[in-house]
Each structure stands twice: as C-alpha cells, then as structure tokens.
Amino acid sequence: MKKLPLVGLLILTVACSSTSSVIKNHKQTLVNHNTFVITEMASDRTYGLSDQNPVEVGGVSESSGPLNERRFLNALTGPNGEKISYFRSGSCCPVKSNNGMSGMAMLDNYRVTYEGSKDTVSIYINMYDSSPLKAPYGFGIKK
Image: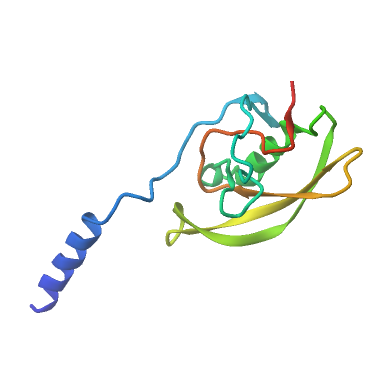
C-alpha cells in the first residue's frame, strides 16, 4: 500500500515535467532517392560543424537514418560548386533526444572534403531528430 502513493507521485512528476526537449520530426523532401532538398544556407557558423549544433536528418524510426545522413551530404557542394567526398569516421557525442534510447542519442561524424580543399571538415549529424536542413558554413547546395 505504501508504494501506491510513490507511484502516483512519480507519474505526476513525469507528466508535469518541462516540455523543453521537444520531439523533432520535421518531414524532409527528396530531390531523388539519394538526395535531400536543401534551399537554405546556415547563418549560424556552428551549424553542423559542432557537436553542440548538429544537422538533424531523422530517419532512425523508419530504418533510414544512415541513408538520410548520406542524402544530406549528397545535397552539398564545396563553396564554389565543387563535388564533395565524405566518409563516416564514427559515432560520438551523446545528445538528448526523445527519439533516442532512454532519452539519449549518439551523433555520427563525417569527414568531408572537396577538390582544392586544404583540409577535411567534420560534419556532425543526428539521425534521431529531424529539423529543416541547411548547408553548413563553407559549403554550397547542389542545384
């Protein structure tokens, strides 16, 4: 009998908790099966280039998370329209996500370069949450 009030209190606490962590399920648009539509350049220079501000492509709930990551990258060019190349360097950086397991998700890190580039750039991608896509600072958008 003593457990019943504790269970009720727990349910009330969870039900009344802050809704600051919103489930992000923005519907992405495709150019074709392998490429997303991106129409905007990021004004925030950290977008995608910092694990604190990852690109959110979604898709994990439909078993298309890794494909969505590639769809995003396939929509990018170098700053002057150069073809990019990329590889997944691994997972990193736990982030809060209501779409992840136990409220957490891991980001994927891709190393991206293009012809004439002097360095490889890290792009951080979240396949658990989805929000409007933008081209990170220093990249262009495929036409």
